[in-house]
Length: 250
Length: 336
Image (cartoon, rainbow over all chains, first blue to last red; front, side, top):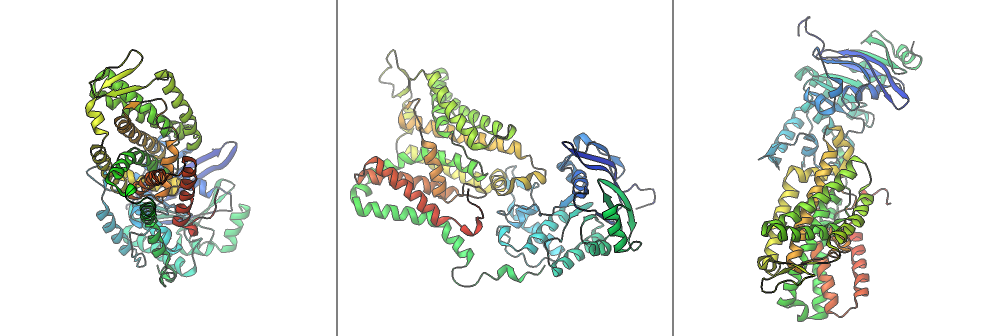
């Protein structure tokens, strides 16, 4: 990347209302290549709305979103379009289909086909193995089993694996370790760092775990009452200062 | 990621996975027991070639309707309009033959697809639950058939007799011969193989299971579930249309009362095949066995001299028993 390159993602004054409730008043941030940023805020502050708006789940009411400097048409801002730009999301509830196998979940919405109608199961299994090998996931052995038979940690691996497999540019992690134990949390954090270093992927992390945020994020964006109010660089903010920014907006 | 718990339960003989496998065989066990039971009760009268030929003629229509239901049920929806759609499609198939000759039979399949598509459009776009939508269609479509037909039937003839002034008839000896064994059996077998390939190996078939598993997730992955559900109901309608043509061949007439209450048999066949009505998975082979089991039980009870009302009681009890055995209660949190 050169100094003249535009940021990978720029979000400017994006707003979103649901009925009479303004969930997001003005969300703005920038994300560079190989960067991990964290979005923190109290419950109901607008973190999820901001992220889901960027991810194309909700069309924004106003504002501007630019990817690699190019503004995207907000009227044509959908999940499919966002995925085409190499942006993937790991949702808090993982967004997996429990009755389907790991390869099907990995290829959800991108099922490879033979002769236009048949599922290319062999290719799916091979690619799934590749992704799991890359991420050092050893425990998901039986790729034919429905993922409801797997543990929470294994399901998390599949959700993250899917995002990393397709999210070549940006992976958005919404509370990625909220349901995990300490060991599995460490594995997820190492995975994020490794993928950033080896693939150059950028990450947007939403987390309530301020220790984790301070460990992983290069920059921390604070959202308060639907407005991205403050921004801190790694190491320049204490946990207490961060709590004040989150709760009081100071 | 390490996870020791993943295989912690996989010890002992009756592991959850083995139980799952055993449940898969419940439809096979049920049909075997049913055959053995009626063999013991009625002996050669039940096991005669003549009787099995009769069963082979009786099952295809129900089986095809059960396939239609299987597609819809796998997505977690239900279609209770298929009986009325059968009458509607058969009527338009017969009308098509009156108007355009033999190729006009295709109008029956198109009519089935149309009803299915309307179901899908109302459910997906107006967001009215499938049960309510198809209940309304069950009533409306049956009424439309009665209005259009004026309560009369269209008969298929072998060409040697001509219709009277009040009776519409079409000379279609080929169609009548298709309704007899072994032709009807061959047609059903071909459709069954195609359905298996469609359900198990195609992208569409896998998507049916994924929608039934978690529709919201598919939306989050950018899949147009609304359009897909319209296609599912239309595909089910096509299958009903094919069933209507087979029924026309077997019964030799398109009557306004055709397929009355048969939707319940189709749902029962799917359930007997171990497909949960909540969707997510299903099996074409087990659905065939479900349809066959229903036909055999009806046939066996009739041969054994059981009055029709008691036959219904026995069928209901069989349905509950088969589902009770095949259900994996560990995966069910709430029953509504």
